[in-house]
Length: 420
Ligand code: GLV
Ligand code: MN
Ligand code: MN
Image: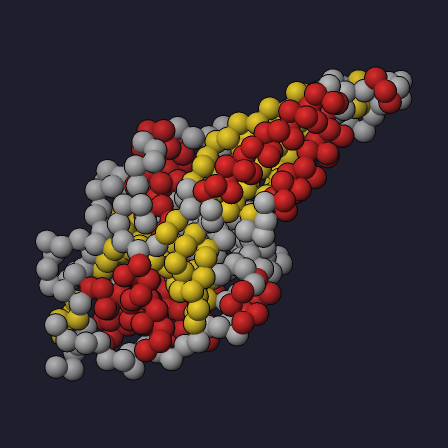
């Protein structure tokens, strides 16, 4: 085994061009991307990705949940590959970097190895995980969760979007229900590059975040059942206004998160008033909650807090606030040896770096339960993400891709570096 040349770099201009070219699939007027999972734009980017991976000499496989695996052969094909990659779906008003950077940088790492004539001992597998975002189908990161055994494939295939379309139907519609069983593609390890999506690296002037933990996540579906009545004739004391009660509940969610802070967050992100009308006191509504912390005990406290608030506000306002927890993802601790490998790559390349906890969920967090996994973060402008304004510099994206390249070379083992 030989050591990879320490000056080996990815092609920054090629990575930057790919990020901006693929941002055309679902481009929004404000410069962001709307590429909901398994929609028409997702098919476009998937077709592009498949062709680009094949052009880079990879064989592309697709599993039953549409996750794409592009394999660059290694000398020992009996060993599972080192997985690298992320996701190509976006939020409804998403940016150009969330998921895209990690997927395209993984492809770029493979191209850089090709250009340098590098042969690795283990194969390398570039991945595009289906539905990381969770905005069309819940839960987020559903394909990697099924891979890790948290759900059966049939369960995930039967999940429906707001229009009632199932994951199975959506996969068939875009032609990405693949023949491989979920979990059939094995890995020796998995490494995901991502923008931080928060403000820490930028504030501290660090180029690389060496991610050693990830927050746990809880998602809820909720309803408020009050009583719809005439807005002009129903006296204030007699009302059972679902929306007014909900307004109190939203503030209670915020308070529960603050009270359990600083390492806890709580968000009410969606609300739909049934049969909303200007002159009807709202009778029924549905909503969602997202709560997170890096400590399991804090997740328990958040759950207890919102459950108690729902009961108290509901009883006092004579409405029924029903909360159903649909997902609890435990906090992630990434593999210490792999985290050290990422840190060494950042150090050897001379990038300012620090350890960091991921506030966002990532496929690597699910995969960490069943294989050694780690993540690399780069800064994004003002910490903004899940917004069309999401931005990152070419230099930082390049640095992250270089750390990914050298991490994967260290893990896959360089047999020949083309110069030998
Ligand atoms: C994934 O995008 C998340 O919600 O963290
Ligand atoms: Mn992401
Ligand atoms: Mn996201």
